Image 1 (cartoon, rainbow, N blue to C red):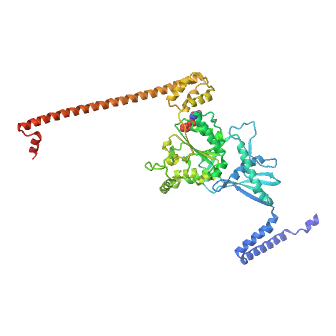
Image 2: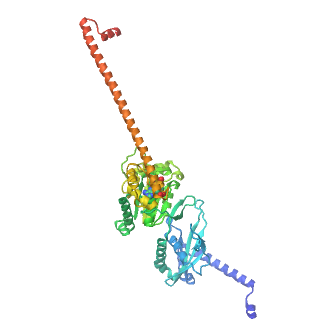
Image 3: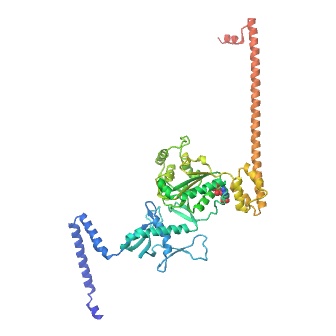
Amino acid sequence: MSSFLKNLPSTSSLVAAYATISTFLMLLKSMFDLMVPAKARESIIAIVQEHIISRFFTSFTFVIEDEWEFGDNALFRAAMVYLPTKIGPSTQTVLLGFKEKHKFETPPETGVPVWGHVVDEFENMKLKWTLKSTKSKNMFYSRGRKFFHLTCNKNHRDKVMKNYFPHVALTARSILNNRKGLRIYTYDQNHCYWESTAFKHPSTFATLAMEPGLKKSIMEDLDMFVNRKVFFERVGRTWKRGYLLYGPPGTGKSSLVAAIANHVRYNIYDLQLGTVKSDFDLRRLLTSTTNQSILLIEDIDCSSSSKVAQERPKDSDDSDDDDDEDNAKSKVEKKSTPPSSQGVTLSGLLNFIDGLWSSCGEERIIIFTTNFREKLDPALRRPGRMDVHINMGYCTPAGFRVLVSTYLGIQEHDLFGKIEKLIQVVEITPAEVAQQIMKSDQPEVALESLVEFLSAKKNEVDEAKTKKELKDTNQEEKLSAKKNRVDEAMTKNEEKDTKQEEKLSGDQDNGQPSESEMRSIYLT
Ligand SMILES: Nc1ncnc2c1ncn2[C@@H]1O[C@H](COP(=O)(O)OP(=O)(O)OP(=O)(O)O)[C@@H](O)[C@H]1O
């Protein structure tokens, strides 16, 4: 050992050797740069890299960023879902968390932390995933970017592309499909991303107060849509469906949206158009929504979204004309308004509904709700733009029966007949019915309360009707009295004229000038 140490070169001779070698290499590089033309240099470097340097490196790295072509990268998202299932004893760091209403007796859920590694094995390949992150350079995009490095043996590169990535995507999809809970997303405009929370709305088609025929046809429409992937591909249409729900407040538009989500098991993206700064932002955030989802735009006629709902001038042609008009108008608006305050334009929204951007995804449902369908721009209302228009009207006897069955658990009662008669003549929303029958657990008390409410409403309606009739009668009487007075006056005038005529003819007979003659004489 000591002889080995003795034979080792001294530190000073090592430093001297290092300096000589590096000077020599630098000299070599400068000569190479000077003597070899740039193009030839690139080719030589490529050959050296491929045939010499790569022999020493056996690994290959795939980079999977969280964004792809202005939208979310579905492969990144699939990896985020898939990798937690691969966390094992070899994993050194793990991300932990609780979802809302997590049962604390069960362990927290796990995820991959930034800079954490997860090793997976697939078809005899070893695959090492690392989640990385960069800090945001953009002051408006404060989240920074995340991306995965997937490292494998370079000989497995093709196999990973062909077999492993589809495996990750399909596994992630089946995990998501089997997840019990749905999620509702709202757009966080400050951080430019969709924030999600568990969606646990209990509304289903069974609990919806609606005409049974309408309910059945909506459910059939949804089922057909969900199972028609091949059809949409064959006919060359985007696999999406648009619903316009309209009706007075409290008729169940939001409840129907929840029932649709629960029926098809799609997450909801709840978009407040007022929070979107421009069409560009709209495009960006819509392309970052996932497939198998519902895009919900509630009260499209209201608040800041009214700009979208009624973008056309009032006197414009109401006919269902082309989008060119919308585009032209939006261009004019854009010129006169600073970009940041433009908000979403009708053409921006229409472009999404049936234009280029809508074809970025598939299996999408778009739902607009409004209390005032007539306020919407004709371009939004026109047939074909939103595939299905659903009128959520006032409560009907059938709807009432659904509500009592859900709220009170009864199918029959002596008061049903009376209530159903009242419901046919009084406009009452399902929300109002629900409010009354929720007042007590005892059906008798709850139904009595509803009868009272309905009777009071009917009295109000009857009173208003009587007042109107009275007003109408008074007006009629006034009109006929006025007419009589006019008739009387006319008769009197006629009588006067006749008398004057008689007098005139008498005077003329007497050789005296008439009154008009007198006047004309005076005037001249
Ligand atoms: N058709 C319905 N079937 C069952 N419940 C209903 C129905 N309509 C209203 N309700 C009840 O009334 C409440 C309010 O209804 P919902 O929010 O769905 O009405 P809406 O038409 O969306 O009202 P708004 O236009 O004010 O948003 C719901 O929580 C639900 O309990």
